[in-house]
Image 1: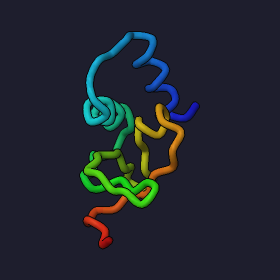
Image 2: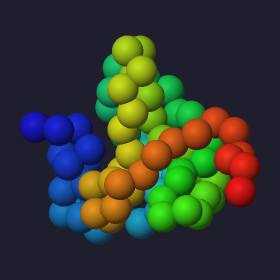
Image 3: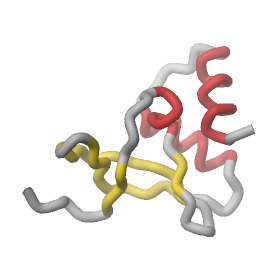
Length: 81
């Protein structure tokens, strides 16, 4: 099972409070060799500060993608425009 979907189900089951940043930190502890990355999430011509998890191979994981059904693009720099 996808680690993000599994964590989202466990968070809902245990009614775990916190923000997306807290939940991504829990996800980073569960995926061996991963780290939290800080940057910007881009969606529908808008950008906001965001954190996500990357494993050693560069694959990106994000708890908010398991909760929201919007596709995000991730950037380490503030995009122009």
